[in-house]
Amino acid sequence: IKGLSKESQRSNAWQSVGRMLKEIGYDDKYQDRDSFITALEKGRVHAKSSSPSSSTPHSSKASPLASKTPPPSTSPTAPTPSSTTPTTTPSPGHVFIANNSVCDVYVDAFLVPCEIGRSRSGRVPAGTIHTQWRRRLRNEDNTLYKEIMKSDSRADLVWPNASELMCFFKHWPFGRFKDNPIEAIPMPVLGEVGYSNYQLTRDEHVDALRQTVAHFIDLTLEMLRDRKVKPLARRMKYLFALPAVGTGYGNAGDVTGEVLRMLLELCSERVRTNDDLDVVIVTADSATFTHAQSLRRKMMRADASALLWPAFRVLSLQRVKEAKELAILAAREELSFFIGAGVSIGAGGFSWLGLLWKIEEDFRVPKLQEKWRGRKDSGLRIADDLKKLCDSKKDKNGEMMSLKARIAKYTDRPFPSLLMVLLASIPVKGVITQNYDRHAELALDHVNIRQKEGMLSVIPYHPVKGARTWLLKMHGCVSAIEDIVITSRDFKTFEHSRLKALGGLVQAELMTSHMLFVGFSMTDPNYLRIIQEVRNALQPRGGGGGGGRWQDERDARKKEEESKRGGWVIRRSVIFAAVLTAVAAFILRDIKKKDKLCN
Image (cartoon, rainbow, N blue to C red; front, side, top):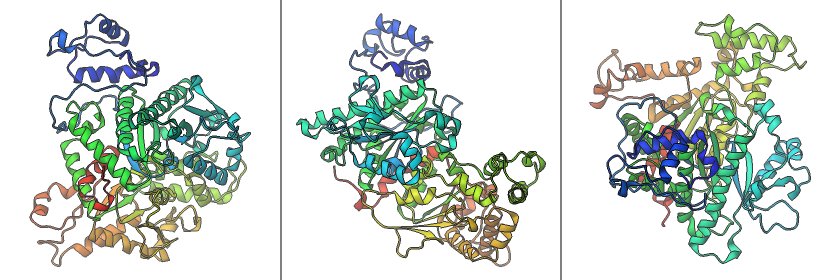
């Protein structure tokens, strides 16, 4: 405890520390941090099952950035998940691993590796990711770029607490983003990785990178807390992203394995001691991604006390089993995704009804959701009323804009959610979505961004033959608002439009692959029609018996034994981000040999 940095010793971290102590067998009578530290200094803290001389924890007086070694494992076997859902407790933090672009994920802050110390000319520190981020911001929102980069030099930066390893942007618009959260974007934090000219040994190089990452997490977290900045996208925790620091142009590519292990150990320690933090390690190629997954699995197996990875313990045995099954299907390219609006909520998006309510707030009218509350078709009726309202009346700001244009305004967000990025990291051939935003294509297009392998086919707007992955957009896109399907009239015309043929692709996927539904409510009328047609096609003549039987989720339990005896079952699977993380963790065993990295 004494070795933790001051920000990690705050009261909000004490609950996590207290739970950790109980899990490894220490006395739970110390109810606050101060009494525990006092007892620790006097040697009065002992494990329940051991003698005082052998159980007193080591109270290191090393630097706050020094490594914290977890208690030694007593068994080489991995922790066994609980068979039932645990009781409600503060959610443990987690270290995610994804294959994507670190500056293209909707997070609160991300680390930008730069050569800070060598930039003595007054220019902004250089770096590949930094250049990519600046170019993108300048092209998409030049006004915001000029607000942040007023002089386009080092004068726009500020070094917190005299740190020489990282710096913030001095003019970051916290106030503007607080007043209008829908405009908020991830905050870049520049970190030093230019150690190639210091003639460091391998261990010294990794330790130097560790100092940079530790400064980034600790000081950024302290700054956000002090400013009382709320996590983006209505999350309960801050989400930080960092790349495999230094392994690109930082000349640490020859120690990639050591860097990944350092990141996993350091980040797991930080999320364990801060109840308001999650971290995602974003790799730029499949080899590094696979290597990181392999290291995490080995660390999980060696961590019998499960202190490093507490989030995995929230998974029941059934969820772990499902995750393994999905991993095997993905490795065999037999898995496809159906992406719903729930996946975009983590990027500041809205559910279908939530989007309509947001548009309704633009007008000073009685609440339409109260008018149609309780009706099965309330969403369509609200959309119909909103269309009439948008076509006939100006909003409270005096703007006249169509319903579909307003939908594009609120859904055209340039950063995919963590959940979408995790899904894109799983190798699948086909993805189907009814969302209007571009999150799916952005996340899929940034997989293996360093290698730039393959192409993405977006149907029907940008079809590419022989593409690595295809994405089907059934209900239109913000880039083609005339195709957006939202009102009851749109759903009716969909049946007779060119887009109806797209339903055949959905039916084929339902019949030939295992479809995983994520963030989808299963109430869309077009989807229900497609499902009914598939159900009818799979129903054998005579209305009963034999194989080829379609099963609804509500009938799955009753017919489980029949499916094991050879019935053809198309199951609906709905899982959360924790299970998706487990999918990524277990996918290593069956992934293709070309994606493995020799250490």
